[in-house]
Amino acid sequence: MKKLLPLAFALLATAAAASGDHTGSHDAAHGDAGMSMGTITKIDTQWHRLTIDHGPLENLGMEGMTMVFEVSDPAMLDGLAEGQEIAFTADRVKGKLTVTEIAPE
Ligand SMILES: [Cu+2]
Image 1 (tube, rainbow, N blue to C red):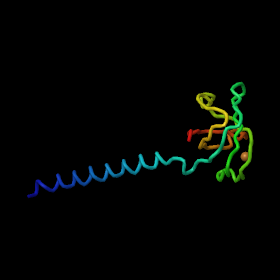
Image 2: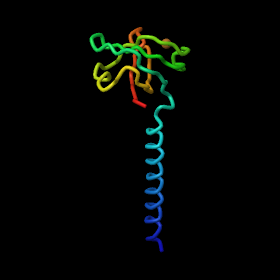
Image 3: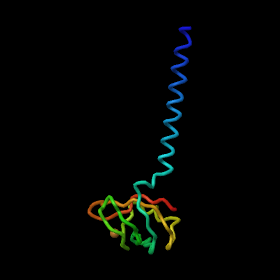
Image 4: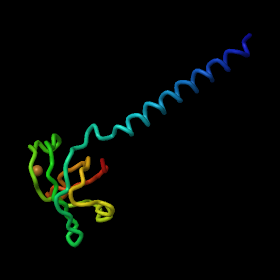
């Protein structure tokens, strides 16, 4: 009987880990919770800038508007199109408002 206990604990631990993984992937799939919505109105591949007609940026205390952002990585511009709706994260990097993450809708 004593030998069954470690097995039971192992099963419990496995079940807990599995449910934990599920929660993690669920959160990742809904990673736009902290992201802002916007529509790309202009892509500047030369200067690595995006003009975005964006909704409220809560982390920056900004209302919706159309404005130019830097992008943290020029590769982020690949595959984007003007007129495309995106979920994105913007932050102040070295004093410049910069898009640090883009998730196409
Ligand atoms: Cu703005």
